Image (spheres, rainbow, N blue to C red):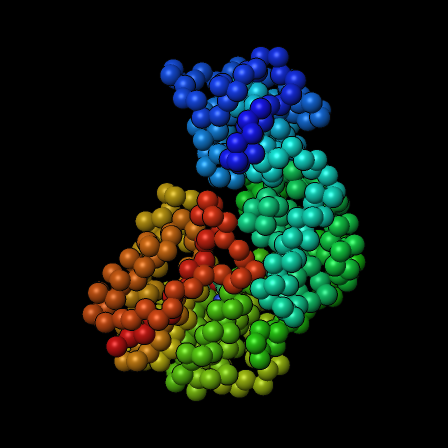
Length: 436
Ligand code: SAH
């Protein structure tokens, strides 16, 4: 076995008769002929610890060794013949151990990284990962009571999202292996954090790709109706069971508070939800118009404004695209504008249409701003990366015939760590721009 200081792979799986016996046949030795995947299996091959083994073709091994935490179906050495939801041993075609992963049968993403080492993936494993996730939040956001506690792959817990809202947790199980460990995860969260309630918000479309149906409900304890939480000086309320996402958009929390610094004059917040940006703008601006298409979100936004005694805010239930177009036609002017729309592209094919949508609203916003005006423009579409988003902004500025400064290039808050090697975890862009 290799004793090099390189990462801890490959490691022989231990009991595979067809595997190599000498070190020369180990990692990185180039194959000279194209690989032919093994025939699909009807019964899975088991490793020394009794866990099923899934072997990778060369491209999959390279991806794994390159640190990418996802392996696609096409990079497996045949169908492993598993029902899905298992922790599996990952090997190369010769049986050399590469690590452990969650297996998904239905998704194009077959394997999700758990470990490079041959460790037991048991209750202690998940407890340790939850504790490590908690330690980051204690470090990065000391004293905070509302934050994303677990951010899936980026916290080494693929397919698990846990948002903390004070005494309550709102959780998403997004892959079969996490779904099957729902009770274990709920027990660990209860024991570790002692929440008054754990809400399950797994009512998301991505579950369909995994062969899971969307579901939501109360997993442990109680559902108290809307819960209160602070964002800077602003008091917020959101319903963890009935609201969007896990109740609120915690990824924008730091950007909400930042927005108050720039707010002045006549302000416009488009795609407001329950007012994360609008209320912050209202603490500084003369007047805020909030545009939101959902009646339920608009009602909660009005309540949140009243609770903060912010009387300088009007909520308009409208399509922001129409509002912006009409505002330009009517010659309206603003000093501060926020654009924070929902994701415009769920897959790569939708990217051009998404960019057109972004350009339309950003162009109009730039047309509406007075000189010295601020545009805070966000995108949560991960298929449109930061460069593409910036290019779109440049093109909108040119078409609007405005000179525009970039003041800040921001992303999600520190409780949403980005995993190097997984661009998908760097999904949120938030630019602060100033029109000359
Ligand atoms: N800015 C919010 C989050 C926005 S999420 C925050 O920081 O908390 C996107 C919001 O846009 C959702 O509330 C959704 O209901 C709303 N929305 C979706 N399409 C819309 C449209 N065409 N016009 C206005 N609002 C829209």
